[in-house]
Length: 230
Image (cartoon, rainbow, N blue to C red):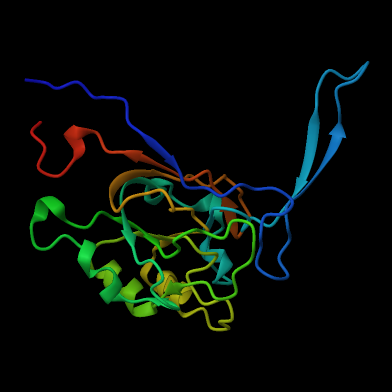
């Protein structure tokens, strides 16, 4: 018997973007001015915005960490859309180690295999109104082990998958070698651990090193959950 699909809950995991939104020190903050405003003879408001593509929730392109890498508008969208797992590693310290994720990796039952997208929550409450120089990042070995498990996209609720003061960007170089995609600066404060559908499509910016995304998670349909009867 066919079961009807139900309306599914959404979680918006994107921080607000405005002129006080924190950015990496030295990066271009969000700025907006009105190029036109509604008035006699002008029927519309039209704004002009200036910002780093790393403001707010964003997807890095290989061009960000590889001089010969692809721009964000060249990337396949498939990694940014589909089943993902949110894992809590709250207050894990400076690096997300493999041991911080083990509790949520699903054991050996293939029905509960790790999805191809993994988002890690490190903050109890994400600092959406300030820059955090002590942000948590991925240990490169964690990136390597996630890739071994079939993960194609990693995400985190901090501004970078590398420590803020890193000059070698070891985790970015790991995703370069492994061909993974990355989302940064998510807000996972209200998201329980578990599996979801991720929707976080970058803009088709054909020469840019990153793109803002409106990242959301959607509750899985009962028919899509592990072990569900079809």
